[in-house]
Image (tube, rainbow over all chains, first blue to last red; front, top):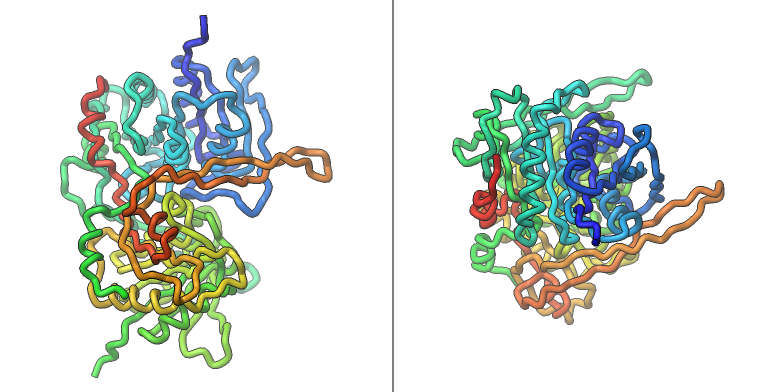
Amino acid sequence: MANKRPLILVTNDDGITAPGIRTLIEVMNTLGDVCVVAPDSPQSAMGHAITINDTLYCDAVEMLKDQSHSEYSCSGTPVDCVKLAVNEILKRKPDLCVSGVNHGSNSSINVIYSGTMSAAVEAGTLGIPSIGFSLLDYSLQANFEPSKKYIKSIAMQCLKNGLPKGVVLNVNIPKLSAKDIKGIKVCRQANAHWEENFDKRTNPLGRDYYWLTGEFVNEDKGEDTDEWALKNGFVSVVPVQFDLTAHHAIKDINSWDLK
Amino acid sequence: MANKRPLILVTNDDGITAPGIRTLIEVMNTLGDVCVVAPDSPQSAMGHAITINDTLYCDAVEMLKDQSHSEYSCSGTPVDCVKLAVNEILKRKPDLCVSGVNHGSNSSINVIYSGTMSAAVEAGTLGIPSIGFSLLDYSLQANFEPSKKYIKSIAMQCLKNGLPKGVVLNVNIPKLSAKDIKGIKVCRQANAHWEENFDKRTNPLGRDYYWLTGEFVNEDKGEDTDEWALKNGFVSVVPVQFDLTAHHAIKDINSWDLK
């Protein structure tokens, strides 16, 4: 009888040594055959960057003693990892790609900066059902325990139902104890943005430099957004698309005097 | 009387020394007061990457003798350039942000990898009307002359009409002589993807590495796409949004057994 266990590709943007990816691997090992291809160093906020003008190294590694799944450490970005995994490492197209668990939020506008979500989107462009998971806790000591139940439930449903063509999932999990998480809400991306505040400093050689800091500003009062769900104790699930066309704006622009 | 010339921010992803940005600066100087803040080195395919764990340098430079506009060279990504420009360099919010002219296509799915478009999107999130321009010619010797007329026309219309909230423009220009360009078409993003083909090599120390290559595959037969427009001699204009929510999929996912 053929092996019917699903093949699951695991990646992230915090790097192969981050605690978040260990949680994801642990849960996915209960659902299928796991292959990990993840960056060898932190790649947060890399967005959909790919390596086109440089070499890519990708080596099999054994992170745990007697691990039953395979792991590869890659010198590239999260998107590079997905491309390499699908084209060079895996023997067949995976049934699911999961990315994370990210240390920190990828809700609302953060989706466009997120290496975690870009890896999921890349797998989506290749026709692979795909989910990015994030926990709203930047700490390396974050407690991923309460997340496991939701990660498993959402991944199982995705394996069972598939996803609409051109859609991947952006899942964010509040930093709450298991008993305080109220459930799962399917949401839209809140309309929010970052207001930057650069910290200007002088280096030891006397040259000025900047350090990016900023404040997240959510002007969206809707109760159907990911921000609302997370603030109110729910796990948020946003279906994300990579057809970026603003179809509603085509008519507007067509009324311009373009020649 | 107050100065009524619009303030125009110019950036790109090929770096401040690329020929494409010189074309864009030249055209924008005919429309308003120009400030250039661009990467100090090529940043192609950087997507929406930002620099969060490192320093950012940004220095005034004089690229041309007696230049009338200001220019800054920045050590960061295209998105960093926009954030720095708006928050630290410009005295007021610009009336327009233009990015490019990119050397090479950013049509279809390329929009998600593109540093050029990510810079435009970033300005869009800050409420600035914004356009990314690309010429379908990777060569540093590309002929940008035929592009100028279209860049000017689209930028003028954008300054005059503004853009719908949450929308920026992705403009691609075919590699054709002026007489062979048939006009401008407002389009949707073609449904296409990249099929990768990694070139596996061995370095002088005996370690294997990969080099990313690939083939662009367009399975979209529509005649309302950017790919169709470009293949048929038109400049393509795609309105692009950064609300990535797949609104049509929310109902689907809500039917899942999530708990």
